[in-house]
Amino acid sequence: MSERVRMCSISFLVLLLLSTIFPCQTMAVSTSASSAILVDVDSGRVLYEQNADARMLIASTTKILTALVAIEEGDLSDVVEVSGEAAGTEGSSMYLKEGETLTLETLLYGLLLCSGNDAAVAIAEAVGGSQTGFVALMNAKAKALGMSSSSFANPNGLDDAHHYSTARDMARLACAAVEDETLVRIASTRTITIEGRTMTNHNKLLRYVDGCIGLKTGYTMAAGRTLVSCVERDGQRLVAVTLQDGNDWADHQALFDYGFSTYPAERAATLGQTVQESPVTGGLVQAVPLVAADSFAWPLSADESLQTSVELDGTLMAPLSAGEKVGTAVFTVDGKEVGRVDLLCGRSVLARPEPAVSLLKQGLPG
Image (cartoon, rainbow, N blue to C red):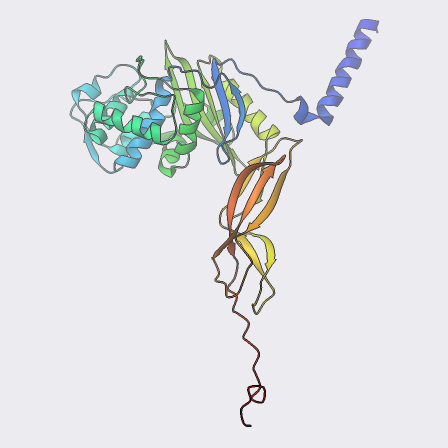
């Protein structure tokens, strides 16, 4: 064996050993995107970002907002008559015909699975009264979600100087969207036959990535490839956004592998779980359980730890009622507060009765 080959073999074995001992520390990620972000849904913690605040064209990922507004403002069973303008919309299509009638639910499948620009216009006209009216609803919803660097000019994402967003804003939208059960049900559907139409989802991640629950692909020549996706594993949900990314399928897989392996969520509280017991003054029992009014988890790297402290609203004095708010659980990482959960009294506590006073001590005749 030559000296060069021997040294290369030794180097490889050293790298292999280090990657086995320190898998998290050696894990890294990068993308081919002009802009990208990876966010933990429940905590909002950003796990990776790259030029995430650049205003960019977003193509058909726009349709996440279109769907969310339509679901909130419309009725899935509403019957929509397709206009000539909707049927003639350029670009990707579910092949609507002027005058045909379909339910809003079917149009939403066409919007999110086929990326139908025609479906987007039909939905906008039905729910908003017109495209202009619906776009106003879209911008109002975006503002309510804190998408301060976004502007929407149409319901489908066709290129427009007044139609743009950022990776960070699109992650905010996606985190809100995955809380809507109807939207997730539709966006996570691979194939469906409904009202005589068979539609297949363009989102290949539903087949490539375990736990993928949508959300939306996009492409125009000016915007390039855009992709917003969400994956859930072991109760933890991550959202990834890439804009102008020619390698988006692989990049999203790499982002999710990085996020789940490097920042697994630690659950610090579960709804109804006893966080601690606290003493009670003047009660028939000496202590009462304090239970969490909500669940809380936080994604942690290998060198981080989550601490919990309890702040009582005051001394616990009987009587107490089950479900009464009595304090707060405060969660910190490296001394920085990352969340709070109300603490409720876990059981009712009756006041201890005053001891009987003898008649003699009251100075009364026996």
